[in-house]
Structures are given as C-alpha cells and as structure tokens.
Image (tube, rainbow over all chains, first blue to last red; front, side, top):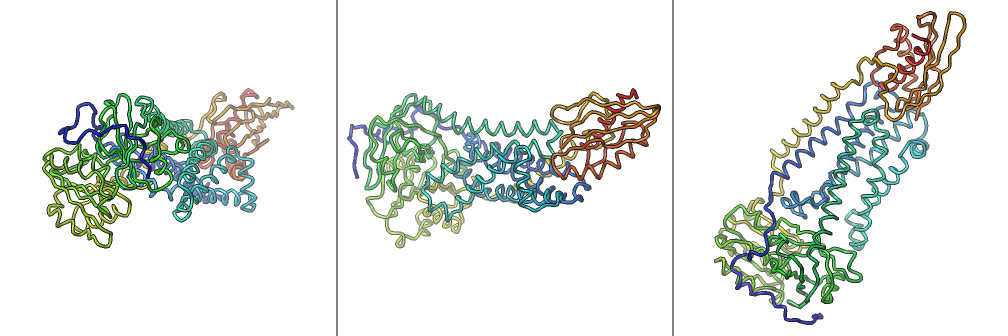
Length: 463
Length: 153
C-alpha cells in the first residue's frame, strides 16, 4: 500500500471548528413539492399521450384488416416512447429534483421503470408489422422489409430499436455482472443515439401527428426541452463547476490498511455549496482514469482551499486513486446526494456507518446541530479498519452525543443489538452508510425494530 | 425521504393521468377534424407542401370534364375527375390515387364510393368528411373543388 509523499497537509483538527465555517455554504435545502409537481406533470403527460393514440383512431379503422394491430402498435409506441422520455429525465440530474430524491433514489427508479419502455416499444414494432402485413396481405418479414425500406424514417428507427434491445439485453443482471462496469456504461450511453435517430418516424408517420401541426410542435418541444436539461445538468454544469474550481490533487495518504485519503486543492471553494454527507463523481485527469467518473463522498466539509475525500481500495480504479500524483487535475460532477442534514425531520439522530461508510457519516456530522445528540455506531470487521475514530469522537462530543464501535466478523455481531445501544432509536432520524449488503441488512433490522421508513436515510456505497 | 409510495400518491397519479387523458379528448372534440369540411380551393389541411400538377380540361359539347389537382393528403396523393353538364355534376370518379402504403390504399378504396355519392348529392365539393378517413376525404374534396374551379363552377 503505497503512500504518496507527505507534504504535511494536515487536515485542520475538527476541534478547532465548533460550528460550520462561514466560508463554505451548505447546499440549498430540498423542496419536496418540486418532486411532487414533477410527478403529477409527468402523469398528466402520460394520460395525454395515451389519449393521442385513442382519439386519432376510429372504429372503422380498427375494423379494417390489420386495423386493430395498427391501433395497438400506435398505442404501445406512444406509451413506450413517453416512458423512454421519463427514463431520460430520471438521469438528467436536475438539481431541484436530485436534492429531494438523491442520485441513488433517481437511479433506483430508473432501473425499476426500465422494463416498461423497452417492452412497449418492442410490442410496438411487432404489432405495427403484423397490422400492416395483414392489410397488405403479405407475410410478417416481407412487411417488415417494406416498412423499413420504403416508409420514411423507419430505417433509422429500426436501427435505433436494435440498439435499444442490445442495451436492454446487456443490462440484464446476469450479463451485466460479467462485463466490466466501464464497458457496460459506454454501451449504455448509446441510448441517446438510439432515441435521437428514432425520433423522426413518430411525427412523420404517427396518425396523431400527421396533419396536426400543434401536436407535432408540442412533441418536438418536450423532446428538445429534455435534451436541453441533459445537456445543461449532465454536461454543462459539471464542466462549468470543474473549470471554476480547478481542483487538483495535493496529497494522498494512507488512513488505514486499504483506505486512502486524497486531499485536493481548489479555487473559490467558498462558492461551492455542498452539504455534509454529499458526494461527487470524480474524474481524475490522469492516464487511464480520465474517461471514468466514480462516486466518492467527501470525508469532511470543504476547508477552502482544500477538499478531502477518502477511498477504500477495492479494485483497479481505486488502486489507481491510491497512486495519484500531486498536481493531477480533477473534473467533478455534483454535489449529489440526499444523505444530508436537510432531510432530518426529528430533533435527534443516529448515524450507523459500515466500513468506509464512515466517510459520509463523518462529513454529515459537521452539519448536525448540537441539539441532535447524535449516537454514532461505527461497524468494522477489525479494529484497524475503523477510520476517523478520533475526528468522529470529537465531533460527537461537541454535540453531546456518543460513539459506539461495533467491531467483529459478521457472524459475531448481531444488528438487533442496535436497540440496546440506542434505546430511543424510534424517535431518531437514522442515517445508514456503507457497502450495499450492510445497508440492506441494517435497514431490514431497523424496519423490524419499528423505525419508520421516513426516518431512515441510506447511502449505499456501490460502484 | 420515504421510499414507499403511500396509497394516496397512487390515487393522485391515477387522477393526474386521467386528467391528461380527458383533456386531450376534450381538445380533440373541439378541433375541426371529423366535422363537415367546406374547403375553399386555396387552403390545405395537410402537412408539407401541396403538389399541384397541371390540370387537364377537355371540352366536348355540353358535357365537360376536368381532372382536379393532385392533392397530397398525408398518406398519399389523390386526383378526382368530374364530368358536368352546364353546372350539374354528372359523374365523379377518382382519376388517380397513390398511397404511401397499402393500408391507406384499401381505406381509400372503401371510402371512395361514399365520397363520390356525397359529392353527387351535394352537387359541390362541400362534402362531409368520412370519419376514419379524414385525410382522404379532405384530399378528395380539394381535388374535386379544383376540378370544378377549372370548369368555372
């Protein structure tokens, strides 16, 4: 485990900062109504889209040979495309929504919704082909060829469809686990291309759009708006932030066996609004690393001009992080995450950290007020795996709370003991951070112990 | 932030979806599609540019015929031939129809007799659009009007 040269950049002692330094603002508070309004608007849009398919078809058209299939094809095509639009919105990282649900929450919905647009669009392809084949009295594959080769814009749409199918197949869990994450990710980005080339055939051929210039305009407008959101918040804003703050690595040091801290220096960090518990996607501009962005939490609030992150070495990328050279420039995306003090609803809090999950807990602690009397549980397999125990202890002491270290193998430690450590667990906001299995186990235990899901806030450390 | 959806959220979603659905239906019934179409020869309700080919006029005795302009109606093009005596329409027929695909072709074949008889009874191009074939009807009416205009009716 190599440690890069120490230049004596000691992180300021937590004891010297009793309160949040004025020099770095907290991230804006989340407004739950934004999410609610967005969901209602999307639902209205979905109803309207379904209605488009129904209003522009008549009974005599449905009764004509192939008419019923064509109608179903129109319906599934519209519904599937609309849901694809929702999928894109879910990963557009619009700050107002991301603040409420968190990046992990948005991704969870993205994964849950995924089977629907792909199934509907696949059905659309099949139904339309069957319908037109019946009306032309030819075979399925012959009609497929006719549609693809003679109908305007259907060839690009068909290519787009096959790209979508390939992405869907590769995303099946059993297959996804066998592919390196970066390769799967690069393939997944082709979805934007697939959507772009499939767009035209809808307004050129769809009965709801042909001869309905207003509908065409609206459809184009919502897709342009979605593209605008993606360009702004996935690309534009991160580039702007990276250029504004010009982060670079100044030191890498070993915090514990297999755990390294990276200290970064940046400009104008007093203008970087970030809350304790949030994370960035980090793109280290070094050879072999610049084309990947990985999420790591800050392990402390910014101390302008310095930022700190702490990383556990679990694979190639994190091993490369441990070998980073001072002066390496960094591009960031974020801050993201709903694992913040803003999401508290109760006066007191409990923080449960598994392994490297202590990083988010450590920075979250800085944002907690005195009255919250936090109880912190640090869970690790071995004593030397407990990281930041002094810093955590000091921050907790300032807030009149207490710390427990739960050290031992998984078989030895019973999570149900949490209720003994924290008797008033049900009256607290509970924050859980760590590896996926740990967080799931703890959350299951919390539910069994009667902690409501509103009070539970989880941050899963998964790549 | 709770990850579970309580029942009233589901109800709100259902209500919003239904609202959107109903709104489009309401808007659709207010729009002119499906109503009686009275088309002056200069307007077009089809997208894109209207292709007009040179109309042909044959004059023979009191009976005159003309073929209207080739009207594009979204799924193809249609040209209607009309035969008149004086200002009375004797016969109406489709001179030329080309469609994008065979569904529109078979649809047009179904509605042509209806449109033709309507034109005969209306003795003008002021015919009611056949529901389910609004584009074909519009194209038919426009081409017929173009033919009648050539004959000075």
